[in-house]
Amino acid sequence: MTVTTVVGCQWGDEAKGKFVDLLAEHASIVARYNGGDNAGHTVVNPHGVFKLRLTPNGLFNPGVRCLIGPGVVLNLDTLLSEISLFQKAGIDLHDRLWISPRCHIVMPYHPLLEEVYEKAKGKAKTGTTRRGMGPVFADKVSYNGIRMFDLLEPSQFAEKLKIQLAVKNPILQVFGVPPLDFEQIYQEKLAQFASLRQWVREPFGLVQETLAGGGNILLEGAQGALLDNNWGTYPFCTASITLSGGAAAGLGIAPRHIDRVIGVTKAYTTRVGGGPMPTELTGETGEIIQRAGQEYGTVTGRARRCGWFDAELARFTCQINGVTELALTKIDVLDSLPTVKICTGYHHPSSGDQLRHYWEGDAHWLEDCQPLYIELPGWKQPTTQARRFAELPPQAQAYVHQIEELVGVAVRWVSVGPGRDETIVI
Image 1: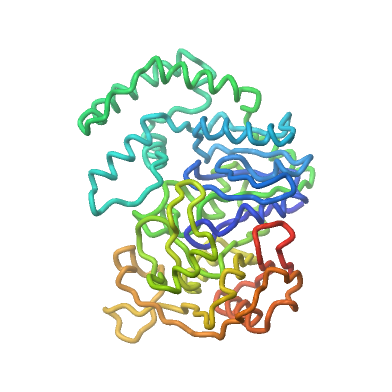
Image 2: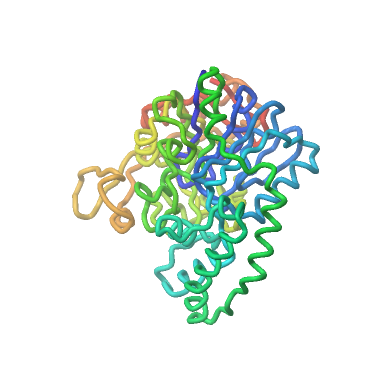
C-alpha cells in the first residue's frame, strides 16, 4: 500500500495534472482534497486534451475510483460541465465518481461579492480569479455555508438560502449590484443537484476500506504551496490549505498513512495575479519564456508572470510539504536561451550582505528582496525528443543536478512536453 500526495511547489500551474494522470495508472483511488474551480490544469492523453478544474484526473484510467473530499468547494456548473466532457469522451463514471456531501457550494452571490471586494480595494486589490473562493470559504468558517448535505433536504436548503440572501443582497445593492432572486437560485441549484445526486456519497468509508486492503491512493492537491492561506504570500494567496498536510482534513486520511509526497515544479517560475515574485523577468527574456511556455491561465486566460527558477522558494516548499521526490516540468521552454539563472537566496535592504529566507518575512517584506543568482550555460538545442536523462544535453543535465543540490530533493521526472510520453523517468 502507498499513499502518494502530489503538490505544487510554486504559485500553481506547475503541471501537477500531468503527473496525477501518469501516476493514476497504478492507483485504486485518486482524490481531490482542497480548493475549488479557481485553478485548472490541462491533461493531454490518448483520450484527447482536457481542461479540468474539479474532477480528479484518475477517471482516464479504467478501474480507478475518483473522490472529491469535503475540503473542496464546488461550483456545480463547472462540475456538471466536466462530467459532460468525460461522458462525451466515452469514459464510464458509474460507481467511479464519489462526491462528499460535506462539500460546500459556491453560490451565485460568492463571485459577485469577490468582485465588489476587489473593486473596493482599488490599487490594493489581490488579483483574484473572481470565482468566489474567498467569500465561499469565509461563509464556511463563519457558519454561513451551504453544503451538498443541505440540498438533500429542500426545505432546509430554502431556509438557509433565504437567510443568506437577506445578508448578501443588501451588501451587493450598496455596490450597485441588483439583488439576487431566491426562487431562481433555489430551483437552479436543486436541478443541478438532481443531475449530480447519483455521485453524492461520503467517500470516507471507501478510503478506510482501501487503506485496510492495501490499495494505492493518489491525492491530488490544487494550486501551489506558495498560495497557501497560512504559508503563502498572504493576502496574495488562495482561501484553502494547499499543502500536503491539508489532505488529512480535506479528505479524512490520517497523516501517518502518507508515505510519499511528490513536489511538482517548473524549470522556471511563474505567477498569475498580484503579489511579490522576486525572480520576475519584465524584459525580453521573460517574454521569450512566456511565449515558449504558453503561459496563460487555464481558468482565467491571464498571462502568467515569468522568471528564473527560485531555489529558495522551492527549498522552503519542499521542506514544509515533506517532499520526497521532485518532478521538474517544462525544461524544454528554456531550450533557446544562451544562459540560465537560478536564485539561491535574497538580499534585503535591512540586512546588508546577509542572505535571507522566504519564511522570514511577509509579502510586503518579500517585495523589497533582491534575488542572488548563479548563472549556468544554456543548451541551445531542443530537448523535446529526449526520453532518457542521458539524452538531454550535458548543460541541461547540469541544470537539473544544480536544482537538486540547491533544493535538497532528488529529481525523479523531467518533463519535456505536455504528453504522457514526453516524460523522462530518472
